[in-house]
Figure 1 (cartoon, rainbow, N blue to C red):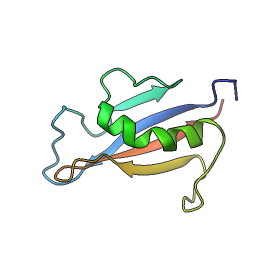
Figure 2: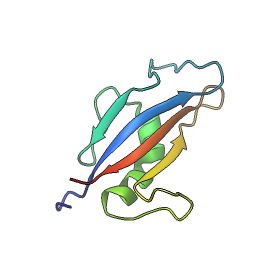
Figure 3: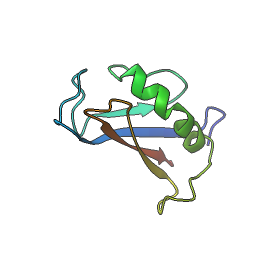
Figure 4: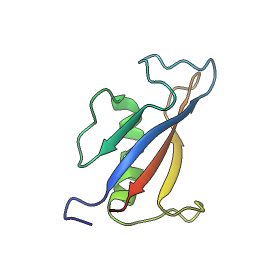
Length: 92
């Protein structure tokens, strides 16, 4: 792990509800987080929800409810069409 922490991959697992994101995010879309900036073409609302969990993964923490300690899953705040994201710590 560098001083910037681990990189974390954000992947869209699915979109619930009608299956359509208002910003055009689609299942299998991916981003790599290398710092504290919102990745290009990522929804800033979703990023704000996931930022605390990204920080945990970036700096070596884990979530006790997750079987794989390098991953976690969360949803964006759209109550009608929540986008389900999987965050994965990248260990090089």
